[in-house]
Amino acid sequence: MTPGPRELLKDAGLRITAPRLAVLEWLAGHPHATADQVTEGVRGKLGTVSTQAVYDVLNACSRTGLLRRIEPAGHPARYETRIGDNHHHLVCRRCGRTEDVDCVHGAAPCLEPSDAAGFVVDEAEVLFWGLCSDCRTSEKEQPA
Amino acid sequence: MTPGPRELLKDAGLRITAPRLAVLEWLAGHPHATADQVTEGVRGKLGTVSTQAVYDVLNACSRTGLLRRIEPAGHPARYETRIGDNHHHLVCRRCGRTEDVDCVHGAAPCLEPSDAAGFVVDEAEVLFWGLCSDCRTSEKEQPA
DNA sequence: TTCGTTTTCTTGACTGGTTCAAGAAAACCC
DNA sequence: GGGTTTTCTTGAACCAGTCAAGAAAACGAA
Image: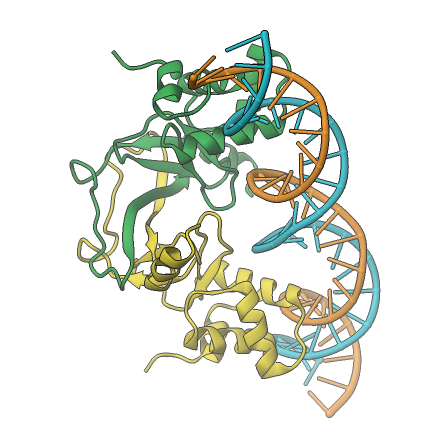
């Protein structure tokens, strides 16, 4: 079975604290949430948690690989617990809604640059930009 | 021959002004520059230009397709005049240096999402993250 | 050319997501 | 349980980029 948040934190060498458990648990059920949404969700579980604590948790977990952070240009960052398979993302230009897309070319890592220009590449990020169905509807009614 | 900035602006229906010409000319010789660098470069040509004017030019030209804007997470946006072929980019995590990479899978558009989840996709963005040669060297001397 | 309209430029204030800083509180290890 | 280390709270700060109002230019027709 998949390890729970408690084990994940321990294995990553991070202390086990209420805010961390709450963030990981909440995010598992709400992928692609923003820091703001996470804060709200976690407050619903724990009562009071500072904004800073949420950012610290998100950063610590992103750094250690427990969370993946997606930062679509022009939108606040989003976080997800699905890690380890390099899947990609669909992002709505208008509302920022983000959805998973499985890798187009089989297994990870699905892309290699044709010429790395002296760079040591460690990640290939693929973002598909467009409009989600909701925003397409509302755009007809009320053009941007 | 490739059209000059003057023609490009005209064809795009944009007025021809000194700041616009200067931005396009300067960017043609300095791809992947930040707004800040563009401002400096343009001031070298024209003397005084407001920051706002530069942003306006960059935005107007991006909107009309004369410029392409790349917004790597955690770094200021970069602009380039190479447009129309969907090439990709290498980005240095440390210094933000950005380089072109030709499309890995032949001609544009080289990528389609496997499942669009109701989105209407208009662009596939590919970013290769890593460390440029300079930053690799300096990282050994002075680890982050 | 000149006028009137429309767009763009200048100046200066402001925003929003995120980070920094100091100290208080909690988790870990023996 | 005590000491150390890490994390949390509070509140200020950051920065790329945007908004707003008015002055100044570019265009198009006469």
